[in-house]
Image 1 (cartoon, rainbow, N blue to C red):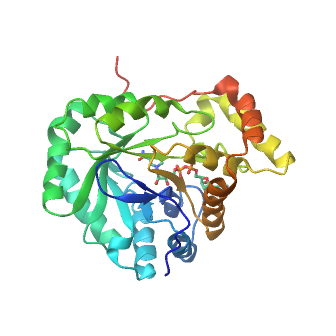
Image 2 (tube, rainbow, N blue to C red):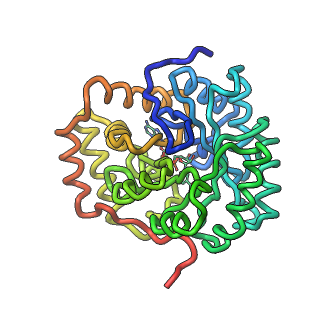
Image 3 (cartoon, rainbow, N blue to C red):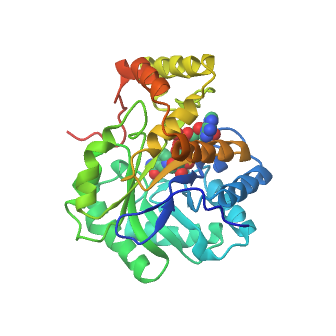
Length: 326
Ligand code: NAD
């Protein structure tokens, strides 16, 4: 596989890692957005690497371990030196077991993940969706356990992920400086919700790297619309129909809502990588093209402002996630 230099690389906090601005979200390889064959999964990973994507994100939760296994096969098929790609996986959330952020479980988790990924180490190990656990346990038990895994060389860096933005400041304010290298936020830096921007100065001041996932709002900003399980489906009907209206508006104009949305998310350079879920070579090509066209021609401001107007009644609407705290 020859590496394509076209895609911009961006530094990730204080880690020294340089992530491609488009990151490969491997949850779709667990067939969570429709069935994906092993052949297509491997071909998608290969196409991504060939086109300059060096960052791949998965979790044992996605497809109940299927995503990790598929990504492992794809990475192996690259035949590339291990230092040429960056892999993150997660711990604490499982399809069959639910949530378990205990030191014992996360310590076992990394070995299971490494076996499925066929790797000796991952670059980043995230605590997955911490709002579903006790944040105080994350601070006092999970992060110290992950620190030991870092010392043992099983992960190079440590991260936390989740939906509500308050969880990041809560935890980062309470752990020793430098013990959390990265945060992964999702659905908060896209055309319909850009609230992550308010947190960026704080994260920068702490030297914490920022990964932003779900630029397409987990399918809301696509022509096909979101999957059944999308959390906005029952609760945010107005959001759903506004996004559908925006997608149709773009299509009628000969434009593509997903390209516009990718480009919007890529414009903020304090975000090191925009993780987009992909399950086909075609989607990989489209999302890389969105980035290279943005670098060459800039954002399509006219269409963007029209779409922003359509989405303005639902701007920054989100949904509850995790254990409800008073
Ligand atoms: P997303 O917004 O990236 O949307 C993915 C959907 O859009 C899939 O159905 C995909 O097939 C489709 N798609 C991708 N490119 C397209 C294109 N060019 N045109 C039309 N459709 C396209 O949502 P996501 O996959 O949930 O998020 C991206 C990744 O970020 C995940 O795979 C995962 O790795 C990560 N993530 C992590 C967390 C967490 O840690 N809590 C949460 C969400 C996402």
